Length: 401
Ligand code: HEC
Ligand code: HEC
Image 1 (tube, rainbow, N blue to C red):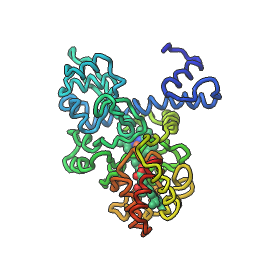
Image 2: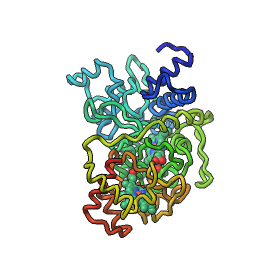
Image 3: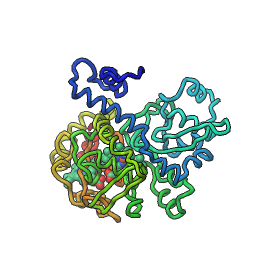
Image 4: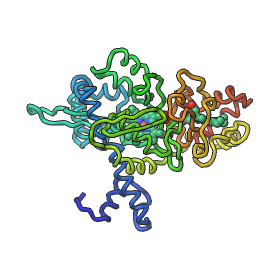
């Protein structure tokens, strides 16, 4: 792409990068600007570390761990994903014919050099004539992107916004030589697709499922507990307090103020990052993945005897913009420790439901493996008196959203 600053080429770049259907003749200046912002945000979402190498390299020494022990097979086994579109033809052929060694950490370093490991950003430099990983950091895509497995399990095209429910974030952090043994035990107990974004703040270890970062358009309460009024609030929280990015996060309700470094590398990236997430729609249920007749009956249960629509209301399936709920509204509660009690609001947001089919297990602790189990749980907890048929129909409806 030629390096020019003409507005037209910027818009063209935005269209190409964001694959936005609406690009072209009809779009107003405003939406063209939004698209350019979202395209910028896409790069940030995928590749920006906000300088968090200070945490992952200087403190946790993950570059050493990766160089010594993390071959691609190991990386895939802890749920890391490889972006097949970042692989040159020779590497693709090498993986196919077995000449690329998936049991060698040097191959992981080669993949990092290609920016092909989703959510990991490596700096690879030549030291004594050899490719050497000198820095590594993490990006939002680590937890909130996966791949479509079109090349091989764990290797395929990126799916941004889809939570990586195969990822073992705790086990990955526990590989660091800088983590004390007792803390490693906690990290190793978290399991797949689970992460506790408050563990390093309050010392309680009780992880929650990694949620989607798609389908958040028109929802003005962010996180399970509605801590922020916009996505940028929580993006700042994670970038600074979890990823270790350089910047500041302050939250009086939690008596929390964290500043990393002396240069703010977070603030100016938040508008574009938010625009990109708002552009990510929840993926539609695949054709044939649910029974349409049963789903139609389930809708009646959802809106009637199930009483689901009293909270899961409107087009977004949540009343979040109007209200948050006391802890008892979560079928997971009472739990110890209560996740809501650790949050800024001490309440729960009604979870939006679009794209449910894509991300089992359900509820913040991942305690319902299926949508049938969700129906069962509500039925007994709220004494709804639904029949097994109604619960089965309800599950088909939920699968269709
Ligand atoms: C280590 C894993 C991890 C990383 C990295 C991460 N997140 Fe998250 N994210 C989570 C978890 C877990 C939650 C759920 C917390 C909650 O809702 O209380 C979450 C919540 C969110 C939400 C709220 C979704 C909703 O339904 O309201 C958004 C948006 C989000 N993350 C975006 C991002 C962005 C953008 C980045 C990069 C700056 C990022 N996350 C980095 C794990 C991660
Ligand atoms: C009183 C308000 C309220 C009612 C009524 C309600 N929900 Fe919920 N729903 C919530 C809240 C709050 C959560 C978040 C709970 C959690 O994760 O701990 C939630 C979470 C869920 C989830 C999990 C979503 C995810 O991504 O993990 C599903 C599915 C769901 N509800 C479906 C239903 C169905 C089906 C009904 C009717 C049988 C129903 N809800 C009735 C408030 C409600």
